[in-house]
Structures are given as C-alpha cells and as structure tokens.
Length: 360
Ligand code: SAH
Ligand code: SF4
Image 1 (cartoon, rainbow, N blue to C red):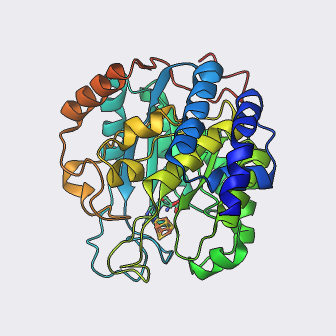
Image 2: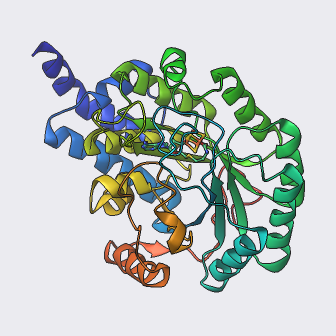
C-alpha cells in the first residue's frame, strides 16, 4: 500500500495548491484521480466546490436541450444512436418544430437553446443556418450547436447566422482508444473541428466520458491536462453508460465517484469554465445533478425534446427525464437548485472566458 501512503502525505498540500491555482501537473492530477479514501475524495470535491463558489459564484445556468434528430452517419462503439443500430426508430424534427420549441424556452426564461443531433447531413448547412437565423430573430436566446463534425465552411455559415456556442467533446486524447471506438472519424479531424470552432470565435465546449472500456487513469489524467491546456469555454464530463445493441453493450459503465473526481478536477484546472452536471451523471444517480453541482459544476441542461421523441434519442439507456412533463420538471429542478442554496441565472450565461460577453 505504499501508493496510498504517498498520497496520504501529499493530499492536503496538493488540495491547498488546487484551491489557490489550477497549475497542477500530470502527476498531481493522476494522484488526485487515484484517491480512494472517502475523506480524501470528499476533500477534493469540496475544494472544487469552493473554487466554483469563489470564481463563478452560486448561479446555475440552465440550457434547454432539443435533440432534433437521432439519425447518425457515424458508428461510435459507445453510442446507442450509431449507424449500425437498426433497433432505433429514427426521427427528425422540422425547422418549424425546432423554432417553436425555442420560442417555448424563451417564454419560460431559459435563455439558451442547445440544438443537438446525431450527424445527420439531411440538415444542410444552409437549412441549419436558416433555423439559427429564425431563432435569433424571434427570441433572445443564445444558440448552442452540438451536431458533430462538419467542414469549416459549415461552422462559418452557422456562426454568421448567429450561433454562439458549439459542443464537441474531444472524447479521449488517447489516439489508440479513440480509434478503438471506431467512430468512423479520425482524431485529427476531431481536433481540426475543435480548432476551427475556436478560430471562428464560438464559445467551444469539449469533454469526455469517464469509464470507457480500456480507459486508464493515465488516459483520464491526459484528458484533464488537455482541458487545462485548452481552457475551454464549456466542459462536459459524464460517465460512460453501456448501451444495448452496441459493441460495448454489457461492459461496465463509468463510476459515480470517478466522474465526480473528474468534474472536480475540471473545475480546479479551468477555474471559470461552464461545467454541466450532465444528464448521464443524473442517470446513474438519482441525485446526480446535486452531486455534480457540489463538485464544481454550474450548468444543468433540462431536456426540451418533445416527449414522443425522447425515448428514441437513446444515446444510452434509461436517460434521466424520459417521461417528465418539461414544465413540471423545470419547477422541480428550480426547487432542487434553490434547496442547495444556489440560484438559477436569469442571464444567457455566456462564457466568462470571453470577457466582452460575460456580463450578458
Ligand atoms: N452527435 C454529436 C452529439 C450527440 S452525442 C456528437 O457526437 O458530438 C453527445 C455526446 O454523448 C458524445 O460526445 C458522447 O461523449 C456522449 N455519449 C455517447 N454515447 C454515450 C454513452 N453510451 N454513455 C455516455 N455518454 C455517451
Ligand atoms: Fe453519432 Fe454522436 Fe452517437 Fe457518435 S456519439 S454515434 S456521432 S450521435
């Protein structure tokens, strides 16, 4: 148990350092990820919570998630929507439906819409640009896109149409693991997309899953060091949840504790990045939102996909909020956030890393 005793000695000093700055090394991050003593783990999560409170305050930003198509040309081994899964009943929302949902969000004071889908090329760049333009004209919403890898010109067109943000998780910086996931894309192209989005001045979100089969502690520490280097505007970290009818069905999923440690380290290494308590986290634990929000997160993404489509957007099974009426769920969520002594933000919650926008 010599490893344990080294970390025992190092933990208090490391946490003080983590509290004061995000300048941790790979070895230090790895050591913190390896903590197992419940007191140590609690101290790590509390450190992240303190950094979150001090740097970005107690506000929680809500993002309305609209999963507008579950068609996908990719074949990611981990994902229930992969192309080869013929058990999925596929659907697409029309432009009018998407714009009407955005209007509903605006009326309810949710100031960001996240338009997410599989990689569905039947929405041309022009068609999506038109949807974005119509949302921007008819509402005061910030628009976040999460539609996967596209050519730079598409990203450019959407930015010009008014899109504010883009979520594209890097998934893993371990190329071998990336390739083993057989997504039908290359690590290089994923990085090219992230680079293009940053150059085009989007607020960009990256992130990764915790507990992918074959993923090691070194891999997770590598992902967190990549996050430290990139200093993204947004950071999505959730547990891997095995989905049926995929090559990874039946494999173990990511653990709650390891995911929370990664969220905490994400906060510590980035300081003011927008970090959601993810739906995947809330799926593996009834109190996943609370636990994430107490481990450094400051965003929640209530699902605003029409109820009759939700079950089909099964990236992973038993997603939180499959059947909840969105308005009732929104009330519950606000109550749960208030019960934690936190407040729902009334603003659009732009990235503090974009100084010119952050007051908005
Ligand atoms: N098609 C787009 C957006 C939808 S997928 C894209 O891939 O970027 C959004 C995220 O869901 C992915 O980035 C991945 O990290 C996560 N995801 C996919 N399958 C998952 C699973 N089985 N468990 C947990 N998260 C998963
Ligand atoms: Fe498609 Fe995204 Fe799922 Fe990959 S993770 S199969 S790109 S929806």
